[in-house]
Image (cartoon, rainbow, N blue to C red; front, side):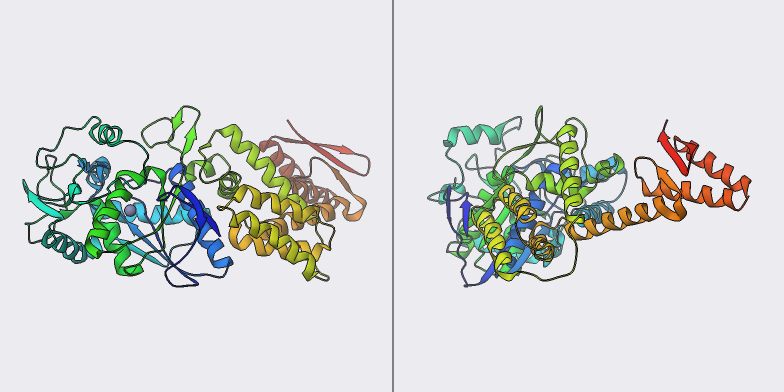
Length: 481
Ligand SMILES: [Zn+2]
């Protein structure tokens, strides 16, 4: 499989330390608020990557952290603790906030058919491991103690900026932006491994350490959690592109200094979801969550398909109009699958040819847009319906759009509507809404049984839904008022 690697800035053949086995790590959510759909774009694309690796025959061990401590309001470890901020906002304890938003995150994932990683580790559960790494970094003189905190000394590295072509000055400005410089640091990009002192209100959760009671920096948790559950050799590290600097840069700095060898050769970064006025964030514009999509009547899987329609390394623009287009596409796609007749022979040769196209798309830097085209190629193919259904079912192991299940629901609804419409020579004319057709049929049955009160009740019930019935010869006609 050819996969773009942010560390080398080119597409390359994906290779693993142990043939056939992938150790994969994903930066998880900071659980101080709901995830917005921009964050979830990364998790959707990483889910597709994981499922595709499994589909391609790899055995995958995927690990994810849950940040419930140490993530400050700036990624460059300045400012207030995000968890404490969330707890104050809602007048709850930090642990209550963590539990609530962890559950909310996994609810969103379930609705988007995102598989839960093999290992999910809250950051607060592995404090001794971080202390061990920080102690080793101190012994190796990659870290120093200053003003109450332990810092990583970036001047000890030959190469600190691994992901960027930007010069150091540009990046340094990014780090400094709106932030008072921390005078305890020897170098401007040094970062905190262990805090005992913060200018801001104190952290609620603290642990004993050789440097005093305190709490870990944000970056150290991902290194500690990954080394614990993925081992010393990580094959694939994933995250949103905004994590590349400083978070991933710092993860590499501390992990490789600790291990003394290359930690993770391949880095997979998903680009931003944008709105028409720029990058989506929690603090700007409408706070777009999966729950909001549902409240507005959207199926979360339509959002998943919307993400699959574009490449993970391109910015994707979200607007309600764009999502409406995706709804139309999704409904048409499901409708076409619903028209396929189940049963019959599967033509294995034809199926293989279609699967090869799908694999070729995803082998080319996880091109999900082309993989969606391969879905339409199946529908257009000159082969049996049974073959098409079998191939679509196979693709859905990776796409996870519930294609066949949704088509089945649609097929049953259509059958019910057709049966209701023609029952006993009574014809219902309307736009074909099974729920309405059923009520119209019940009204007819009531009238036939001379139960006029019931017939009137149903007429009123439909009226309350904005539907008007007119009796016509041989049946009834309904329309929305
Ligand atoms: Zn991370």
